[in-house]
Image 1 (cartoon, rainbow, N blue to C red):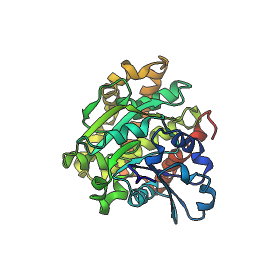
Image 2 (image 1 turned 120 degrees about the vertical axis):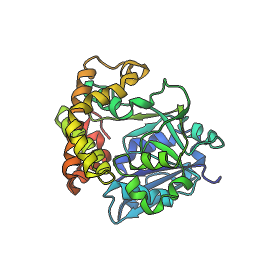
Image 3 (image 1 turned 180 degrees about the vertical axis):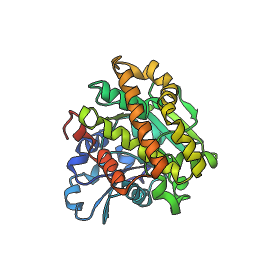
Image 4 (image 1 turned 90 degrees about the vertical axis):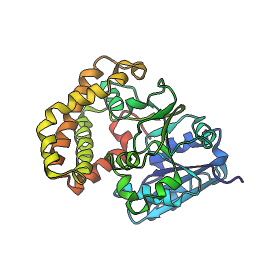
Length: 314
């Protein structure tokens, strides 16, 4: 069997949580060159043996005492990966069949970070659309390929060697927030966008959970910045927090009115604004007092079991 060209890293608690993802990985045209790295809690190995190793270049089960926080578990997956390129996936992100092949074919190009095109995998209502546009609308499939300023922290491919240079801080860098993006900008890392590598992303769509998830997102971003920023800068941003929704919407203008909104209902626009308000509230609270550990755990729960907050089933 050939050596792995790409390692796909995902954190889960059990096989059921990643069943849909495993089906997508088995459908990859380049699965024989794909290594699947699954980080899970102690004792989950037997359940995860349902992932068929003979269909891939390899399957690695990395058992941890705990998968909380998920950033620490992601870092363990990166360390266990053997391929030169690592993709940080999620339990609720589903790659199209040619996804892995596109990334492998791009291996010889000059880049440190490769961002695939993201599409809404559950376009069921305005809440789902607003969450998708806010989180991933800047990387929709209708944008041109080439160098870009940066990408999200996960649902992204990295040169493993680049991540390992951050070994001492890797767990912190792979958490919610923009620590990794800031570090990469400081190091002049090259990020490229590959619109033919497509990943469908599932988004929270139930009204009951919408406010909390948006608020926690802002809280985690603000908390990561709080650790880097001076007290004066944090106070300034708290005072300016009412302006954050307008700034967010201005930044997302091309995503709202461009190609990524195909099928998006007009009601997603006011919903997007409301979501930006919730996020701004979280940021302001974090700048003022930081985030509690329980908030990180709750946000990780949204990330691990996102399908529970939609109309989809596992």
